[in-house]
Length: 165
Image (tube, rainbow, N blue to C red):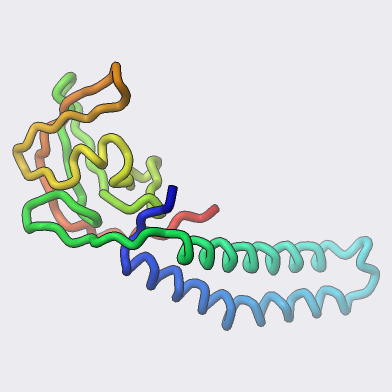
């Protein structure tokens, strides 16, 4: 399954790759050289730490490059008043009246611990395109479903990072 990303996601990944290649890489290479110059590598913690950071940077570059190549670019536009990517949506769960707020994001930005919900998740699919006052059915599987009512929709002011690996 290809990750769904927006043009903005692609741009941010390209900017991060550029920063990692032109700013972080030279700095990390210099740190490895300095640590190597300290002598005996078998007991040189600084050398191994510097190598580890350099390798993490290179892995992140490869990861982002692969994501750019393999992701599906989707349109993130939506009508005014409809829940869409980048919107903060407050819902009320019909079953118990519990209220929660989610930010709709692409699969690459999803982070359920921060309530950044992918438009591909069950609740994301259900509320994407809904309007304030709509009652929508969230289908989890063939046996489980529940209803939520859209209470509020507004543009999110949070800058959601692209997921790390």
